[in-house]
Image (cartoon, rainbow, N blue to C red; front, side, top):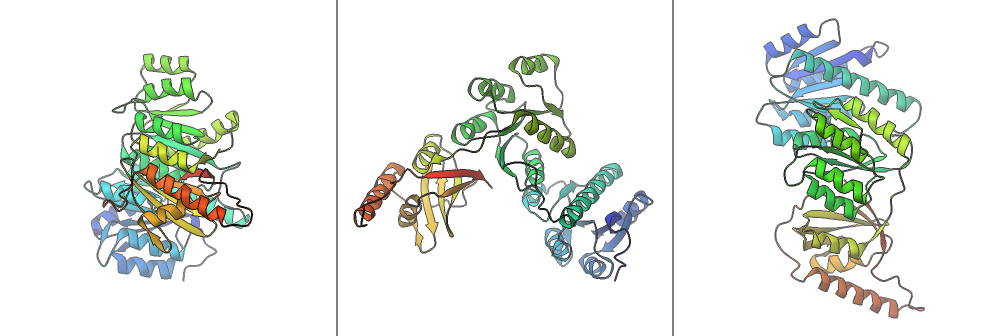
Length: 389
């Protein structure tokens, strides 16, 4: 077993099935980091057992006997603070989007990449590992100061959205939402209390500049950070005239973004998250034709409402499915709603309109209240905190 008194923070395990690639990486990083290479998953697992823990574990997606994601999950079970890096081919972008949402993945790299990119990624992983260890020693949770803050990421590039989202979700005090253009962002701003918007400028349907103009009129106190490949002088002047001065150029430096977020929140002072009635929230989803899953939590109960283009198509909770599940969920008082930007269901199980479902749920609540000693009920208009997974 590796001597734990050594400098673990500089140790990196690199797993791949290409011996030449491993050799080149080790040579390029010689003197900068302590690199251990493994040819395939079997050697990788032996290295974890005999020479671990490692600050960073890097794995190719397709390795014999398992997948890179599975290998990184096993590695993190052995060393929870290790930073996992997944190596992908140019045709694996869908996997990349899934990977960055996985808590076992710190970053992904798409081959071919330059030695400098790999070095910067590994150094960032080492830095995260070091901070995690220091936080644990101090007996603190990994989180940013202050109350939970809801951040909306607006970018038509799914990879950029995934990278920023994956980074922010490492922090317990950030709730993250995403939108692929300004129009979707506008809908979310009207439905949910947003504490910060991070937006690209060039997007289809509704551009970032149009979104900034809308926010200036309707949400002037919401801080904004702009992401752009190149900021033209006339666009910069338009931003400044609207009062928006914070921007970062792509390719994005994640550490710079985190620093700017912390600085902005410190300067602005963000209001507390406000609730919204459950029925009003459901009707807004219908009006704006949003596809999503609502995860509703009430004490130790969990229910799900599935919306496809604004239509309530299915629901489920413990013991119930379909309409009965919807009635049960809507009837919960003081529930908490989490919004997930996808709908795994496609079959329409609930054939009634949303209004009919709400009316029937309200009738059932009234009947239940009438049977109680004092007839107390708050009805369907319960306050719900809204968050994003």
